[in-house]
Image (cartoon, rainbow, N blue to C red; front, side, top):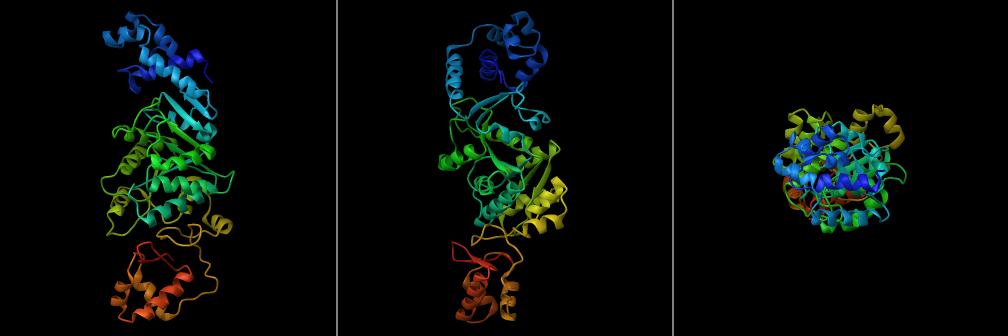
Length: 389
């Protein structure tokens, strides 16, 4: 860890107006550590900076910057709070491979999880129930296999991915939430309880100074950290114009693997995933597809160890979020098989099924109940039914 004087210089370098991450790294490349930057003369600084900025850095920091540095040290004194600089041995090595690594990271939680093998999971904020269930199931399985699941703490797929990772057996994987605000400014506020659970089992991370509010342009920068920390990025659901596609693009540019879950051709939230697949992203139907790709573990070993076969397309229903081939002895009769074939894997209402099958309401209802009890279908919150096996 850096000494207080060293850390004060690191903080000042990230807080000075008009000194962005690119300029800060250029100065570090020339002068070495931040203390040497601020010890340089105006003449030395002017070789690389405009005169006004050189004079600014050669002078004492302004009172507002000194005040924020002091507040940061007070924050740092509390349990579980850390700041990792580019010179810190705990700084995640994965970010060094990116073209734009943050100069420092604020960490609330367990900094050691930043060294774990990491998979990013991103997707729509206004996700479907099935999409959120898929995110939870994939994240729970991958965390159980020792992966750290990283996402952005947003509503929808992000939150579901964090929740799934937290449901994995203790001591297996973990989860990291990369924030687009200052580490002490939780956004969205509705995810406060989730954030508290993440800091206990994983880590909250931000590159932004304390008290930085939520501003739109900061979230793409947040996304580059999500992509940079990861060996691969899974897009669960995404519209054509989606921030998740930015994360996927950044991951591809960094040489990371990009995965996408396909969906209905009629769903706007599938179009972003389908576009990624057309562009070369790997189509995945199970969490094992990702495990095999990134870890090289044979599928038969994973199947034998876990019994997990398929999680894509799951609606909200019973169980842990995974679907197996175990049917507890139930075999659908011919009429039930016909109903399943007609359903496909898209949600349908009772009226639509009655109209399509041309049989009575009571008969369809009876078949649906039997199939629901056998976990072949689930009833969604809006009353529709969805096949999951």
